[in-house]
Image (tube, rainbow, N blue to C red):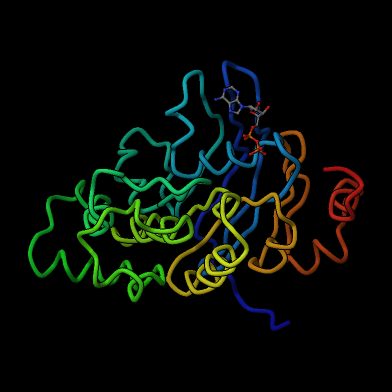
Length: 257
Ligand code: ADP
């Protein structure tokens, strides 16, 4: 492997997340390098989703939620008082476990929905942004002749790629994917995995997955969580072949999970 200088794009420093004062994530410190894919793995309930949601301030939308510690996006502390969380979520986009297209909007309007916060985009600009986002989500060829149709006419996998198009329309810097293939069939899963690979040329990607094969296939770096703690993180190949921690080894070899 070629050793190269990696620029950290997003970093957590002693990040803890709570629900009604009860910790779900404890003092996690980890950096995400620019234009890489990081997989967050660990058994169900270990805090993967909660951790991910802290990275674009979605966690605070949940009743009883609070955070401690720091999340730095380049040099900006995203929890600083001057940061507008809605604007932040345009810079750090998110895609959820189940496809969540807006059912009453057309395919085109679903993509454009992500743009509205920055003012209305109209005319040729709007068309260009929609096409660019749909191409970026590897969906353009499948929907270009039916942009005004309902997203509900699409397959689950296509709907998920539409949600990725919606997330990339405002040109974010980071994309967070929360188990994006857990509701999809194997072929759609492969499409999304191929897409994740392409996304990293433009974005920094963090993906939560309970599927270790998927983590091994798509990521450059893997972070293993257990009971709210970040046990270790490192190059994916190393985590899966030479983990440093006993608990990581036990998990990746299937002794629990
Ligand atoms: P994972 O993504 O690894 O399955 P989660 O981040 O969803 O784990 O959950 C971590 C812990 O936080 C679990 O103990 C879970 O029960 C708790 N938790 C998650 N969501 C909520 C919520 N909305 N209210 C209270 N507790 C929650």
